[in-house]
Length: 360
Ligand SMILES: Cc1cc2nc3c(=O)[nH]c(=O)nc-3n(C[C@H](O)[C@H](O)[C@H](O)COP(=O)(O)OP(=O)(O)OC[C@H]3O[C@@H](n4cnc5c(N)ncnc54)[C@H](O)[C@@H]3O)c2cc1C
Image (cartoon, rainbow, N blue to C red; front, side, top):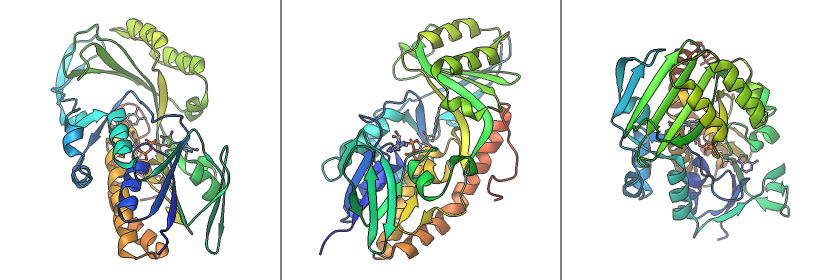
């Protein structure tokens, strides 16, 4: 019997996790990733609830635990830098926290022997027909697949091609920020500091690499388009937001400009009426991003991969039934995470409306 051929766009978390399950279930899996090599993002991600079962099922829980940040907790500071409280480690680190790049690397390692990875390319067009999907690429030759999955993040190319423009599905929560690392000049040891002042927040921590300090400078803004501006403009926006802020701000702004691992991102949620159309389905942030403030994005990506793969296995190739099951089972969990994401964004000066972006 010929194997069904599937294409997954995106090789971060949701993509390789889905690839793991589908190759195990005897699909012929290709993953295309825009980046030239597996991405090495600077921040840490955490796992909660059933996501740990997914890691165990994939046989990587022990390997992931070896890289645990093992944070002790976070000290809350007022505008002057004086301590006003403490947060337990679980507040940011969930049940288990690791650098995101470790997760991506391990997922790639456990799938690379059985999955075709194409780095440095992107889907450019998708045409569905009766027996499959014709996929065109920016660089490679056009190919045929039975099913296509968009696991390509908040600004998913698959979603844009099949479901519509970003503006109709991506909701900005009014909170943006810069992230980078600097030398650990405060001597933090598996601990964090969170200073919240008006519409800005500084979060600093140091974990496994005691020489490095991970820095996040976030601020309330109604300019989601900053995500797509160049670094100079993003840095100017950060400096404007933090102007007049005391404590460590001057030092940290200088460290931001000196950093070679600077990134900028906005807290967004993705909301769609349906997560599939015909032979194309979305997974992870591409379909239902709950925003970094939810602390659930990585867990959602892993649980989403397992739910989708199980639905496909149970439906024995009937993808329409499988996609409906996937969505029915996962929606309540996503709705709860998105609600938490909005509430947490509001704590940092973002727009934490209690209404769902999709009315949930
Ligand atoms: C600053 C920050 C902090 C966060 N902190 C946490 C946290 O503490 N806990 C937590 O659980 N989650 C956190 N998250 C969220 C978490 O990173 C995501 O929810 C999770 O990575 C989703 O995985 P994904 O695979 O769906 O998408 P992503 O990780 O966004 O991966 C998408 C992949 O698709 C690729 N891609 C994009 N476009 C294309 C294209 N056209 N063709 C091919 N490939 C493409 C990208 O390069 C990327 O590799 C944080 C996110 C940010 C930005």
